[in-house]
Image (tube, rainbow, N blue to C red; front, side, top):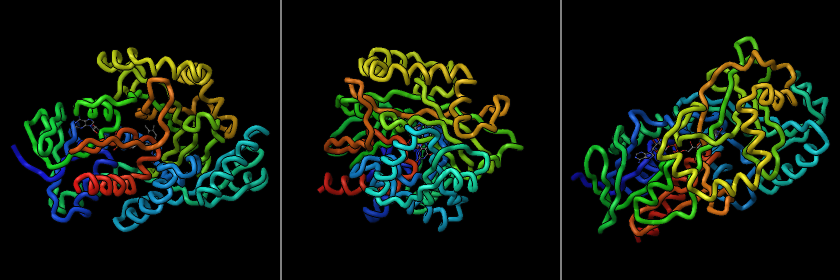
Length: 398
Ligand SMILES: Cc1cc2nc3c(=O)[nH]c(=O)nc-3n(C[C@H](O)[C@H](O)[C@H](O)COP(=O)(O)OP(=O)(O)OC[C@H]3O[C@@H](n4cnc5c(N)ncnc54)[C@H](O)[C@@H]3O)c2cc1C
Protein backbone atom coordinates (compact mmCIF):
# COMPACT_ATOMS: atom_id res chain seq x y z
CA UNK A 1 0.00 0.00 0.00
CA UNK A 2 1.44 3.40 -1.02
CA UNK A 3 1.38 6.27 1.49
CA UNK A 4 0.66 9.94 0.84
CA UNK A 5 0.09 13.07 2.88
CA UNK A 6 -3.00 14.02 0.91
CA UNK A 7 -5.26 12.06 -1.40
CA UNK A 8 -7.63 14.06 -3.60
CA UNK A 9 -10.61 12.38 -5.28
CA UNK A 10 -11.63 13.99 -8.59
CA UNK A 11 -9.77 15.10 -11.68
CA UNK A 12 -11.96 18.12 -12.45
CA UNK A 13 -10.91 21.74 -12.06
CA UNK A 14 -11.72 21.84 -8.33
CA UNK A 15 -9.69 18.67 -7.62
CA UNK A 16 -6.65 19.85 -9.55
CA UNK A 17 -6.73 23.38 -8.15
CA UNK A 18 -6.95 21.83 -4.67
CA UNK A 19 -4.05 19.42 -5.28
CA UNK A 20 -1.87 22.33 -6.43
CA UNK A 21 -2.89 24.46 -3.43
CA UNK A 22 -2.15 21.60 -1.00
CA UNK A 23 1.37 21.38 -2.45
CA UNK A 24 1.83 25.13 -2.08
CA UNK A 25 0.36 25.46 1.40
CA UNK A 26 1.89 22.31 2.93
CA UNK A 27 5.54 22.37 1.91
CA UNK A 28 6.83 19.13 0.37
CA UNK A 29 3.48 17.36 0.94
CA UNK A 30 3.08 14.14 -1.05
CA UNK A 31 -0.17 14.53 -3.01
CA UNK A 32 -2.07 11.92 -5.05
CA UNK A 33 -5.08 12.70 -7.29
CA UNK A 34 -7.45 9.81 -8.10
CA UNK A 35 -9.72 10.09 -11.15
CA UNK A 36 -12.08 7.33 -12.27
CA UNK A 37 -11.99 8.26 -15.97
CA UNK A 38 -9.14 7.72 -18.43
CA UNK A 39 -8.76 11.49 -18.85
CA UNK A 40 -9.11 14.55 -16.63
CA UNK A 41 -11.88 17.15 -16.88
CA UNK A 42 -14.38 15.14 -18.91
CA UNK A 43 -17.43 15.76 -16.74
CA UNK A 44 -18.69 19.18 -15.56
CA UNK A 45 -15.31 20.86 -16.09
CA UNK A 46 -15.17 19.86 -19.75
CA UNK A 47 -18.87 20.33 -20.54
CA UNK A 48 -19.89 23.84 -19.62
CA UNK A 49 -20.39 27.33 -21.08
CA UNK A 50 -16.78 28.37 -20.57
CA UNK A 51 -17.77 31.65 -18.93
CA UNK A 52 -15.40 33.29 -16.46
CA UNK A 53 -18.25 34.68 -14.42
CA UNK A 54 -18.19 38.12 -12.80
CA UNK A 55 -20.58 37.15 -9.98
CA UNK A 56 -23.74 39.07 -10.90
CA UNK A 57 -26.35 36.73 -9.43
CA UNK A 58 -24.99 35.58 -6.10
CA UNK A 59 -26.38 36.53 -2.70
CA UNK A 60 -24.21 39.17 -1.04
CA UNK A 61 -22.04 37.59 1.63
CA UNK A 62 -22.31 34.10 0.14
CA UNK A 63 -19.23 32.01 -0.63
CA UNK A 64 -20.27 32.12 -4.29
CA UNK A 65 -20.22 35.94 -4.33
CA UNK A 66 -16.85 36.02 -2.58
CA UNK A 67 -15.08 33.25 -4.51
CA UNK A 68 -16.48 34.19 -7.92
CA UNK A 69 -15.19 37.74 -7.73
CA UNK A 70 -11.73 36.57 -6.64
CA UNK A 71 -11.79 33.64 -9.08
CA UNK A 72 -12.59 35.93 -12.01
CA UNK A 73 -9.36 37.86 -11.41
CA UNK A 74 -7.25 34.78 -10.58
CA UNK A 75 -8.43 32.69 -13.55
CA UNK A 76 -7.55 35.46 -15.98
CA UNK A 77 -4.16 36.01 -14.29
CA UNK A 78 -3.44 32.25 -14.46
CA UNK A 79 -4.33 32.15 -18.17
CA UNK A 80 -2.19 35.21 -18.87
CA UNK A 81 0.78 33.72 -17.01
CA UNK A 82 0.57 30.35 -18.77
CA UNK A 83 -0.49 31.37 -22.25
CA UNK A 84 -3.94 29.72 -22.03
CA UNK A 85 -6.28 31.34 -24.58
CA UNK A 86 -9.02 33.44 -22.94
CA UNK A 87 -10.88 36.64 -23.82
CA UNK A 88 -12.26 39.46 -21.71
CA UNK A 89 -15.49 39.71 -23.66
CA UNK A 90 -17.72 41.35 -21.05
CA UNK A 91 -21.37 40.26 -21.04
CA UNK A 92 -24.80 41.76 -21.70
CA UNK A 93 -27.90 40.98 -19.65
CA UNK A 94 -30.84 41.95 -21.82
CA UNK A 95 -34.24 43.11 -20.53
CA UNK A 96 -37.01 42.42 -23.02
CA UNK A 97 -40.06 43.78 -21.16
CA UNK A 98 -41.14 45.90 -18.19
CA UNK A 99 -40.90 42.98 -15.72
CA UNK A 100 -37.33 42.25 -16.86
CA UNK A 101 -36.48 45.91 -16.48
CA UNK A 102 -37.73 45.84 -12.89
CA UNK A 103 -35.79 42.64 -12.11
CA UNK A 104 -32.75 44.20 -13.76
CA UNK A 105 -32.79 47.01 -11.18
CA UNK A 106 -32.56 44.39 -8.42
CA UNK A 107 -29.61 42.76 -10.20
CA UNK A 108 -27.88 46.13 -10.55
CA UNK A 109 -28.32 46.70 -6.82
CA UNK A 110 -26.90 43.25 -6.11
CA UNK A 111 -23.89 44.02 -8.31
CA UNK A 112 -23.37 47.28 -6.44
CA UNK A 113 -23.33 45.43 -3.10
CA UNK A 114 -21.07 42.70 -4.52
CA UNK A 115 -18.75 45.42 -5.92
CA UNK A 116 -19.09 44.28 -9.53
CA UNK A 117 -18.67 46.95 -12.15
CA UNK A 118 -21.75 47.38 -14.37
CA UNK A 119 -23.19 49.92 -16.76
CA UNK A 120 -26.88 50.39 -17.54
CA UNK A 121 -27.57 50.66 -21.27
CA UNK A 122 -30.69 52.00 -22.98
CA UNK A 123 -32.26 50.47 -26.09
CA UNK A 124 -30.15 52.59 -28.45
CA UNK A 125 -26.85 51.78 -26.72
CA UNK A 126 -27.72 48.08 -26.75
CA UNK A 127 -28.43 48.23 -30.52
CA UNK A 128 -25.11 49.95 -31.14
CA UNK A 129 -23.24 47.26 -29.24
CA UNK A 130 -25.18 44.25 -30.57
CA UNK A 131 -27.23 45.10 -33.71
CA UNK A 132 -28.85 41.64 -33.78
CA UNK A 133 -30.09 41.80 -30.19
CA UNK A 134 -33.46 43.23 -29.25
CA UNK A 135 -34.32 44.59 -25.83
CA UNK A 136 -35.70 47.55 -23.94
CA UNK A 137 -32.55 47.96 -21.81
CA UNK A 138 -29.45 46.03 -20.81
CA UNK A 139 -26.75 45.69 -18.19
CA UNK A 140 -23.14 45.63 -19.34
CA UNK A 141 -20.75 43.62 -17.17
CA UNK A 142 -17.21 44.27 -18.44
CA UNK A 143 -15.28 41.74 -16.30
CA UNK A 144 -16.91 38.58 -17.73
CA UNK A 145 -14.59 36.46 -19.86
CA UNK A 146 -14.47 33.19 -21.80
CA UNK A 147 -12.05 30.27 -21.59
CA UNK A 148 -11.88 26.49 -21.96
CA UNK A 149 -11.81 25.28 -18.34
CA UNK A 150 -10.46 21.89 -19.46
CA UNK A 151 -7.33 23.72 -20.67
CA UNK A 152 -6.99 25.44 -17.30
CA UNK A 153 -7.29 22.02 -15.62
CA UNK A 154 -4.64 20.56 -17.91
CA UNK A 155 -2.19 23.29 -16.91
CA UNK A 156 -3.00 22.82 -13.20
CA UNK A 157 -2.33 19.08 -13.62
CA UNK A 158 1.04 19.79 -15.25
CA UNK A 159 1.97 21.97 -12.28
CA UNK A 160 0.89 19.30 -9.78
CA UNK A 161 3.08 16.70 -11.50
CA UNK A 162 6.01 19.13 -11.88
CA UNK A 163 5.87 19.74 -8.11
CA UNK A 164 6.17 16.00 -7.43
CA UNK A 165 2.46 15.10 -7.21
CA UNK A 166 0.93 11.99 -8.75
CA UNK A 167 -2.23 11.71 -10.82
CA UNK A 168 -3.78 8.29 -11.23
CA UNK A 169 -6.50 8.05 -13.89
CA UNK A 170 -8.77 5.04 -14.49
CA UNK A 171 -8.83 4.71 -10.71
CA UNK A 172 -12.36 4.74 -9.31
CA UNK A 173 -12.56 5.07 -5.53
CA UNK A 174 -14.91 2.41 -4.18
CA UNK A 175 -14.40 2.55 -0.43
CA UNK A 176 -13.02 4.72 2.37
CA UNK A 177 -12.04 3.90 5.94
CA UNK A 178 -10.81 6.37 8.51
CA UNK A 179 -8.05 5.14 10.84
CA UNK A 180 -5.12 7.30 12.06
CA UNK A 181 -5.34 8.55 8.50
CA UNK A 182 -7.52 7.37 5.67
CA UNK A 183 -7.48 4.13 3.72
CA UNK A 184 -8.74 4.49 0.17
CA UNK A 185 -9.90 1.43 -1.77
CA UNK A 186 -9.85 1.79 -5.56
CA UNK A 187 -10.18 -0.50 -8.56
CA UNK A 188 -6.37 -0.29 -8.77
CA UNK A 189 -5.70 -1.25 -5.15
CA UNK A 190 -5.30 0.40 -1.78
CA UNK A 191 -3.77 3.80 -0.98
CA UNK A 192 -3.21 5.44 2.37
CA UNK A 193 -3.26 9.15 3.12
CA UNK A 194 -2.93 11.31 6.22
CA UNK A 195 -5.91 13.28 4.96
CA UNK A 196 -8.49 13.05 2.17
CA UNK A 197 -10.07 15.82 0.12
CA UNK A 198 -12.94 14.87 -2.18
CA UNK A 199 -13.93 16.97 -5.21
CA UNK A 200 -16.13 14.34 -6.87
CA UNK A 201 -18.68 16.62 -8.56
CA UNK A 202 -21.75 14.59 -9.55
CA UNK A 203 -20.82 11.90 -6.97
CA UNK A 204 -20.05 14.11 -3.95
CA UNK A 205 -22.87 12.67 -1.80
CA UNK A 206 -21.72 9.10 -2.51
CA UNK A 207 -18.24 9.87 -1.19
CA UNK A 208 -19.81 11.21 2.00
CA UNK A 209 -21.71 7.92 2.34
CA UNK A 210 -18.47 5.95 1.79
CA UNK A 211 -17.21 7.67 4.95
CA UNK A 212 -20.17 6.32 6.89
CA UNK A 213 -21.90 9.72 7.09
CA UNK A 214 -25.45 10.56 6.02
CA UNK A 215 -25.49 13.71 3.91
CA UNK A 216 -28.61 15.88 4.37
CA UNK A 217 -28.84 16.33 0.61
CA UNK A 218 -28.68 14.29 -2.56
CA UNK A 219 -27.11 15.18 -5.88
CA UNK A 220 -29.73 15.31 -8.63
CA UNK A 221 -28.39 15.51 -12.18
CA UNK A 222 -29.77 18.24 -14.47
CA UNK A 223 -28.81 18.00 -18.12
CA UNK A 224 -28.05 21.27 -19.88
CA UNK A 225 -28.64 20.99 -23.64
CA UNK A 226 -26.76 23.24 -26.01
CA UNK A 227 -26.89 23.94 -29.73
CA UNK A 228 -24.22 25.41 -31.94
CA UNK A 229 -24.98 28.02 -34.62
CA UNK A 230 -23.70 27.45 -38.18
CA UNK A 231 -20.42 29.15 -39.16
CA UNK A 232 -22.25 31.90 -41.10
CA UNK A 233 -24.07 32.91 -37.91
CA UNK A 234 -21.22 32.47 -35.44
CA UNK A 235 -20.65 36.25 -35.34
CA UNK A 236 -24.32 37.16 -34.98
CA UNK A 237 -23.33 38.47 -31.53
CA UNK A 238 -19.87 39.28 -30.25
CA UNK A 239 -20.50 39.18 -26.47
CA UNK A 240 -22.15 36.58 -24.24
CA UNK A 241 -25.85 37.54 -24.21
CA UNK A 242 -27.96 36.55 -21.19
CA UNK A 243 -31.64 37.07 -20.43
CA UNK A 244 -32.59 38.70 -17.11
CA UNK A 245 -33.13 35.64 -14.88
CA UNK A 246 -36.21 34.80 -12.87
CA UNK A 247 -35.03 35.78 -9.37
CA UNK A 248 -36.44 32.51 -7.97
CA UNK A 249 -34.57 30.34 -10.48
CA UNK A 250 -31.46 32.33 -11.35
CA UNK A 251 -29.64 29.33 -12.88
CA UNK A 252 -32.29 29.04 -15.64
CA UNK A 253 -31.93 31.13 -18.79
CA UNK A 254 -30.72 30.12 -22.22
CA UNK A 255 -27.87 32.35 -23.30
CA UNK A 256 -25.74 32.95 -26.37
CA UNK A 257 -22.07 32.29 -25.76
CA UNK A 258 -19.12 32.96 -28.03
CA UNK A 259 -16.75 30.09 -27.18
CA UNK A 260 -12.98 30.42 -27.09
CA UNK A 261 -12.69 28.15 -30.19
CA UNK A 262 -14.66 30.71 -32.26
CA UNK A 263 -18.00 28.88 -32.24
CA UNK A 264 -21.23 30.35 -30.87
CA UNK A 265 -23.45 28.22 -28.65
CA UNK A 266 -27.04 28.57 -27.48
CA UNK A 267 -28.04 27.12 -24.11
CA UNK A 268 -28.11 25.47 -21.68
CA UNK A 269 -31.60 24.52 -20.47
CA UNK A 270 -32.05 22.31 -17.37
CA UNK A 271 -33.94 19.01 -17.45
CA UNK A 272 -33.64 16.05 -15.11
CA UNK A 273 -31.13 13.53 -16.52
CA UNK A 274 -31.77 9.79 -16.23
CA UNK A 275 -28.16 9.16 -15.16
CA UNK A 276 -25.65 11.23 -13.25
CA UNK A 277 -23.48 11.20 -16.35
CA UNK A 278 -26.40 11.03 -18.78
CA UNK A 279 -25.31 13.29 -21.59
CA UNK A 280 -27.92 12.15 -24.06
CA UNK A 281 -31.66 12.19 -23.44
CA UNK A 282 -32.09 8.43 -23.18
CA UNK A 283 -28.90 7.48 -21.33
CA UNK A 284 -30.07 5.68 -18.21
CA UNK A 285 -28.33 4.22 -15.21
CA UNK A 286 -30.48 1.94 -13.07
CA UNK A 287 -28.63 2.67 -9.82
CA UNK A 288 -28.90 6.42 -10.43
CA UNK A 289 -32.59 6.10 -11.31
CA UNK A 290 -33.36 4.12 -8.17
CA UNK A 291 -31.39 6.63 -6.11
CA UNK A 292 -33.24 9.57 -7.65
CA UNK A 293 -36.81 8.28 -7.73
CA UNK A 294 -36.66 6.94 -4.15
CA UNK A 295 -35.72 10.40 -2.93
CA UNK A 296 -38.57 12.54 -1.54
CA UNK A 297 -36.55 15.70 -2.28
CA UNK A 298 -37.03 15.12 -6.01
CA UNK A 299 -40.84 15.16 -5.78
CA UNK A 300 -40.84 18.13 -3.43
CA UNK A 301 -38.55 20.05 -5.79
CA UNK A 302 -40.93 19.33 -8.69
CA UNK A 303 -43.93 20.41 -6.56
CA UNK A 304 -42.17 23.67 -5.74
CA UNK A 305 -41.58 24.52 -9.38
CA UNK A 306 -44.20 22.59 -11.42
CA UNK A 307 -44.40 25.15 -14.23
CA UNK A 308 -40.64 25.50 -14.62
CA UNK A 309 -40.26 21.68 -14.60
CA UNK A 310 -42.88 21.24 -17.32
CA UNK A 311 -41.62 24.14 -19.44
CA UNK A 312 -38.02 22.91 -19.33
CA UNK A 313 -39.15 19.39 -20.27
CA UNK A 314 -41.38 20.68 -23.07
CA UNK A 315 -38.61 22.89 -24.48
CA UNK A 316 -36.19 19.99 -24.36
CA UNK A 317 -38.52 17.84 -26.47
CA UNK A 318 -40.00 20.62 -28.62
CA UNK A 319 -37.35 22.71 -30.36
CA UNK A 320 -39.60 25.69 -31.28
CA UNK A 321 -40.22 26.15 -27.54
CA UNK A 322 -36.47 26.29 -26.89
CA UNK A 323 -36.00 28.67 -29.83
CA UNK A 324 -38.71 31.03 -28.59
CA UNK A 325 -36.67 31.75 -25.47
CA UNK A 326 -33.67 32.83 -27.57
CA UNK A 327 -35.81 34.72 -30.08
CA UNK A 328 -37.05 36.99 -27.30
CA UNK A 329 -33.69 38.76 -27.48
CA UNK A 330 -32.21 37.47 -30.76
CA UNK A 331 -34.94 37.07 -33.41
CA UNK A 332 -32.49 36.37 -36.26
CA UNK A 333 -31.85 32.78 -35.09
CA UNK A 334 -34.00 30.22 -36.94
CA UNK A 335 -34.83 26.63 -36.05
CA UNK A 336 -32.52 25.25 -38.76
CA UNK A 337 -29.65 27.18 -37.14
CA UNK A 338 -29.77 24.96 -34.04
CA UNK A 339 -27.04 22.41 -34.77
CA UNK A 340 -26.06 19.61 -32.36
CA UNK A 341 -23.57 20.37 -29.60
CA UNK A 342 -22.51 18.24 -26.59
CA UNK A 343 -24.61 18.69 -23.46
CA UNK A 344 -23.43 18.95 -19.85
CA UNK A 345 -24.91 17.66 -16.59
CA UNK A 346 -25.06 19.90 -13.52
CA UNK A 347 -24.65 18.38 -10.06
CA UNK A 348 -27.45 20.01 -8.10
CA UNK A 349 -27.58 19.29 -4.37
CA UNK A 350 -31.18 19.07 -3.13
CA UNK A 351 -32.37 18.77 0.49
CA UNK A 352 -35.07 16.21 1.43
CA UNK A 353 -37.62 19.08 1.61
CA UNK A 354 -36.95 19.93 -2.04
CA UNK A 355 -34.89 23.08 -1.51
CA UNK A 356 -31.85 23.45 -3.67
CA UNK A 357 -28.54 24.22 -2.03
CA UNK A 358 -27.40 27.43 -3.61
CA UNK A 359 -24.04 28.07 -2.05
CA UNK A 360 -20.85 26.03 -2.11
CA UNK A 361 -20.94 23.46 0.67
CA UNK A 362 -18.18 21.54 2.47
CA UNK A 363 -18.55 18.54 4.79
CA UNK A 364 -15.85 17.61 7.30
CA UNK A 365 -14.91 14.51 9.23
CA UNK A 366 -11.81 14.00 11.34
CA UNK A 367 -9.66 12.91 8.39
CA UNK A 368 -11.54 14.16 5.37
CA UNK A 369 -12.98 17.26 3.77
CA UNK A 370 -15.58 16.75 1.07
CA UNK A 371 -16.80 19.32 -1.40
CA UNK A 372 -20.53 18.60 -1.19
CA UNK A 373 -21.90 21.24 -3.54
CA UNK A 374 -19.86 23.00 -6.21
CA UNK A 375 -22.25 24.16 -8.95
CA UNK A 376 -21.66 27.09 -11.29
CA UNK A 377 -19.60 29.28 -10.89
CA UNK A 378 -17.27 26.66 -9.37
CA UNK A 379 -15.11 26.52 -12.50
CA UNK A 380 -14.49 30.28 -12.26
CA UNK A 381 -14.07 29.99 -8.49
CA UNK A 382 -11.82 26.88 -8.40
CA UNK A 383 -8.70 28.66 -7.13
CA UNK A 384 -10.38 30.50 -4.21
CA UNK A 385 -12.31 27.29 -3.40
CA UNK A 386 -8.98 25.44 -3.25
CA UNK A 387 -7.57 28.03 -0.85
CA UNK A 388 -10.68 27.81 1.32
CA UNK A 389 -10.33 24.01 1.43
CA UNK A 390 -6.66 24.16 2.38
CA UNK A 391 -7.32 26.69 5.15
CA UNK A 392 -9.97 24.35 6.54
CA UNK A 393 -7.62 21.35 6.24
CA UNK A 394 -4.90 23.27 8.09
CA UNK A 395 -7.29 23.85 11.02
CA UNK A 396 -8.53 20.22 10.99
CA UNK A 397 -4.98 18.85 11.01
CA UNK A 398 -3.99 21.17 13.90
C1 LIG B 1 -24.03 22.87 -18.37
C2 LIG B 1 -23.09 23.54 -17.42
C3 LIG B 1 -22.67 24.86 -17.63
C4 LIG B 1 -21.80 25.47 -16.73
N1 LIG B 1 -21.27 26.69 -17.03
C5 LIG B 1 -20.33 27.23 -16.22
C6 LIG B 1 -19.66 28.42 -16.58
O1 LIG B 1 -19.87 28.97 -17.65
N2 LIG B 1 -18.77 28.95 -15.71
C7 LIG B 1 -18.48 28.36 -14.50
O2 LIG B 1 -17.68 28.90 -13.74
N3 LIG B 1 -19.06 27.19 -14.16
C8 LIG B 1 -19.95 26.61 -15.00
N4 LIG B 1 -20.52 25.41 -14.70
C9 LIG B 1 -20.16 24.76 -13.43
C10 LIG B 1 -18.79 24.11 -13.48
O3 LIG B 1 -18.58 23.44 -14.70
C11 LIG B 1 -18.66 23.14 -12.32
O4 LIG B 1 -19.12 23.78 -11.15
C12 LIG B 1 -17.21 22.71 -12.11
O5 LIG B 1 -16.67 22.22 -13.30
C13 LIG B 1 -17.14 21.67 -11.01
O6 LIG B 1 -15.85 21.11 -11.04
P1 LIG B 1 -15.52 19.81 -10.20
O7 LIG B 1 -14.08 19.57 -10.32
O8 LIG B 1 -16.11 19.99 -8.82
O9 LIG B 1 -16.43 18.66 -10.85
P2 LIG B 1 -16.18 17.75 -12.15
O10 LIG B 1 -15.60 18.50 -13.26
O11 LIG B 1 -17.48 17.06 -12.39
O12 LIG B 1 -15.10 16.71 -11.66
C14 LIG B 1 -15.36 15.71 -10.69
C15 LIG B 1 -14.50 14.52 -11.03
O13 LIG B 1 -14.57 13.55 -9.99
C16 LIG B 1 -14.47 12.27 -10.59
N5 LIG B 1 -15.01 11.29 -9.66
C17 LIG B 1 -16.28 11.23 -9.16
N6 LIG B 1 -16.41 10.15 -8.36
C18 LIG B 1 -15.20 9.52 -8.35
C19 LIG B 1 -14.72 8.32 -7.70
N7 LIG B 1 -15.51 7.56 -6.92
N8 LIG B 1 -13.43 7.96 -7.92
C20 LIG B 1 -12.61 8.72 -8.70
N9 LIG B 1 -13.03 9.84 -9.35
C21 LIG B 1 -14.30 10.24 -9.17
C22 LIG B 1 -15.31 12.42 -11.85
O14 LIG B 1 -15.03 11.43 -12.81
C23 LIG B 1 -14.93 13.82 -12.31
O15 LIG B 1 -13.89 13.84 -13.25
C24 LIG B 1 -21.37 24.77 -15.57
C25 LIG B 1 -21.77 23.44 -15.37
C26 LIG B 1 -22.59 22.81 -16.30
C27 LIG B 1 -22.93 21.38 -16.10
